[in-house]
Length: 239
Length: 301
Ligand SMILES: Nc1ncnc2c1ncn2[C@@H]1O[C@H](COP(=O)(O)OP(=O)(O)OP(=O)(O)O)[C@@H](O)[C@H]1O
Ligand SMILES: [Mg+2]
Image (cartoon, rainbow over all chains, first blue to last red; front, side, top):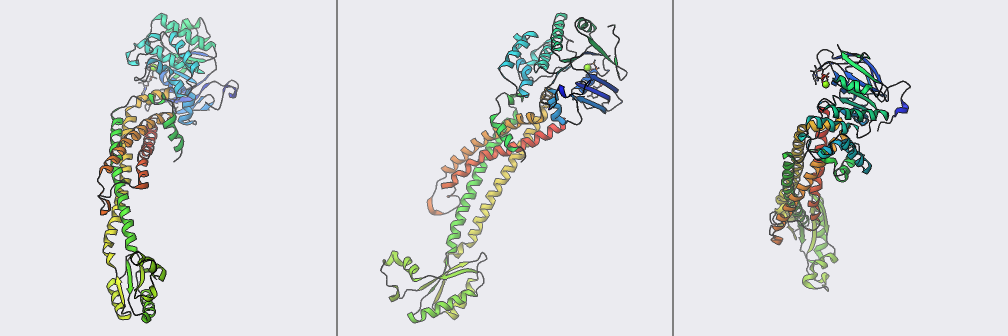
C-alpha cells in the first residue's frame, strides 16, 4: 500500500487533485487548465458531449494517462513522480469501471471480479464471502461461472462495477456504468454506489443519463461537473 | 542478478491462482517445452562427450608424464659416474621439466612383482632408471639421444609412449568442443525462450492492460509469465535429460579400448552432472523471460 494515508493529507487537500492540468493525445489539447480537488467522501457526476474527454479525464484520475502539463496528485503524490509501481499501488485504492469493461476472457466472471484481490495478494475467506454478496447485489450469481464473452453488455457492466468495488477502494471512478442496463438495474447499481459513498468512499460517475443524476440527487449531495470546450466546469444545480 | 532469489522463489511458491491470470498454454509454451527437451537431450550428449574426452586426456596425460625413462646399464664401478653424467646432460636439455634417478628402494618396488621381496639389488646388474618429465612443449628426442650416446655410453632413452602426444591434444580439443557446445546450447535456449516469451507477452497486451487496471505491478505481471516459462523449460529439460541419459547408458561400453565413442557413458561422480541440466535450463528460461517481460512492460507503459 501507499506509505501515505488520508491522515497525511494536508487539510483541504483532496484524494485526487488536478492542478492546471492539460492533456493532448498528440493533436490539439483536449483538456486545458483543469484544476480540481476531489474531497474524500464526495459524490460527483461527470457529463459532457460525446468525445468531450470524459474518459480521458477519468484516465488521468487513475494514472492511466499522465498529464501533458500541470500536476495530477493521487493521495497527495504526484503521478509523474511515483513511477509505474506507485501508480499500481494507488490503483488498488481506486476502483475503476472502464467504459469498455475489460476482462480476462479466460477466467470466469467470479474470478474476474476477484482479480484485484489476487493481484494485491489479499485473497482470503472473508473476501470470498464479500465476493458472493457482491455478485448477488449486482444480480450475477447465476452467471458467476460464465466467461465474460458470454455476458450481455449490461451484465458486463455489472461485473465491472463489482470488480471495481471489491477491494473496498477509497475512490470509485465509473465510466458510463449504467449505459447498457434497464432502469431497475441502474437504480440498483446506483444504490450500491450510494451505499459505498455513505461508507466514506469518494465516487465519480461519468454519464449521459440525466435521470440517473436526478435519482442520485434525491439521496446525496452530488455535484455535477461538465466538460465543454476543453474546460471542466461546475454544471448548473438545476439538473 | 538483482532480485534473482525472490524470482526463483516466486516460481515455486506462488499460489496456484496467480499464474492463471495469463491465458492458458499457448503454442509458444508448447514450443518452449519441446525445445527445452531437445536442448537438454543435446546437452547430455555434449556433456558425455566432454567428460569422456576429459577422462581420456587425463589418462593419456598421466601415461605420457611417466612415459620417458633413461635406462643406464653399466658395470658396477661405472654406474655412479654415468648416472651423474646423464643427469648433467638432462640438466642442460630444453623441454625437460623434471628428472630424478630412482632410489634403490623404488627400483626394488618396481621389480618386486617379478623377483620377490628379497632381491639383492647391489649384487645384480640391474640398470639404473631415471624418470623424466617433459614440459608442455616437449623435448627434442633425437637430439637428446645423440648427446647421451656421446657422453653416457650405457644410457638408453625410452620414449615409446610419446606417439600419443598429438592424440592428447586431440582429446583436449574434443573436451573444449564439448564445453563450447554446452555454452551454445544454453545460449540457444535463452534465445528461443526470449522469442517465445516476447511473442506471448505482445499477444497478451490486453491481459496486461486489465491487470494494470486492477493495480498489478510490473513485478506481478512479469512473475506470472516467468513462472509459466520457467516451469515449462524445467519440465521439458527434465524429460530431455532423462532420455539423453538413458541413451548414453545404452551405448555399449567396450571396457578399456579407450576410444571416445565407446567410453561415452557417465562414470562415478560424472552422474552428478546431468542432474544440473534441468535446473540450469530453468534458470536460463527465468532470466530470459524476465528480461523479455521487463522490456515488453516498458514498451506497453
Ligand atoms: N488513444 C487515443 N488517441 C488519440 N485520440 C484519442 C484517444 N482516445 C481518445 N481520443 C480522442 O479524444 C477525444 C475524447 O475522447 P474520450 O474517450 O475522452 O471522450 P468521452 O467524453 O469519453 O466520449 P464518450 O461520451 O463518447 O465516451 C475523442 O475525440 C477521441 O477520439
Ligand atoms: Mg467515454
